[in-house]
Image: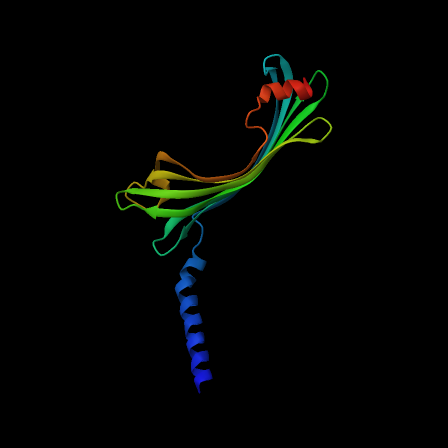
Length: 191
């Protein structure tokens, strides 16, 4: 008898949890987009004295979705960018590949017409020389907070206005290029 009561209690709790989260799971994104862009351009006097062809390619996925009992909107994106600079005088190429994601971890309605958003950014940037060898790696995560005016509608992000960057909360990772000069690297590796 005790076992059957326990099973009924567990089954009842499972149904209650499923019912309470059903609205959250069914919440459809307000925005869910993907775009791809690529192109090429010749730049004269790049980094002072070089003529280069700049090739670029970008893939971005972006979404806005209601979350939690208050239906506040959370954003998220994933990106991949590739930029290549080819010195037209010698056909040497310097390439930078960036991959990463950013997402809202916590959106707080401050009750005064503003939202505080805690954002997580994670990713990596790799720089490659003419022979394809990786020269530099910047990789890691950081969390930061921003203050947003929600325009009187905390669940409608389309009338929001950025007010203030509140600062970095936490960061960790590796940064090979922190003290490097991009144009000096361009001259060293493809100039």
